[in-house]
Image 1 (cartoon, rainbow, N blue to C red):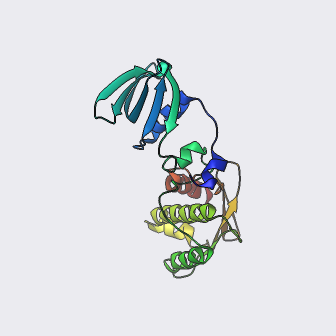
Image 2: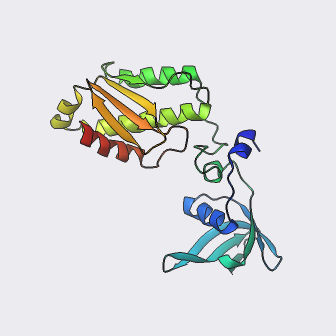
Image 3: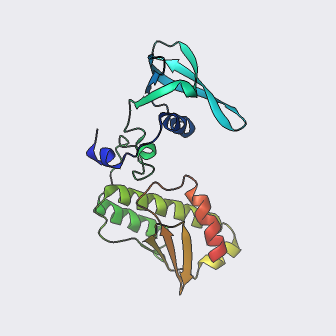
Amino acid sequence: MQETLVKEITARSPVDLLIKVYETGKNSALKILLKSGVFIEGFIIHLSEKDGIYQDVCFLLEDKTIGFFNLSEISLVCVKQPKLLAVELSDGAISRPLNEGERCTSLQLKRWLLKQESKYDNRLKLMVPDNLSDENQRLNIKDAIGALTEAINRICKDDLGKSAWTEITTVQIIYSDEKIFLKKYDGRITVHINYKKALPSQLAEILEEKLLNTL
């Protein structure tokens, strides 16, 4: 297991972990110890709910049989593919599964930013923090800019949106450990975002809404 993941893992109860794995929808193999002393290995199929609270588990075992048990019966949960669940195990401190293999050096990020600027005929300057030594942060910056350009393109679909955007010449990404917020002044928009942790899955929609309220 990569040292990065080991340093970022946070403790939680076995039941909370199992629920987290289920809610992510990731097909991650688990090894579960029941209070009866029985070990089972396999994948979560479904968790039943009653009054908004998870109760029972439907589990696909390695021998392809189906097992059923109550969450209260769980004593231990072991994650057999921790790299796949790096985001969940680290509470977002790691922003993507460690086995995805995507790379982004400082030079690759600079080249990618220039390519994005060219899509706006180089009339828009994209600024990101200097000296991003952590590759995970560079990938997050790339994802944030990608979501931002998607939001810009949606806004500029009509003449009114294009007119509002023409006065913007610079977009700058700034670190913030608070909720995402935007500021506008002198043709510049600053996007304050925590790029050191996993980004929201609906980031483009969030940025679009905030841009509409800012322009």
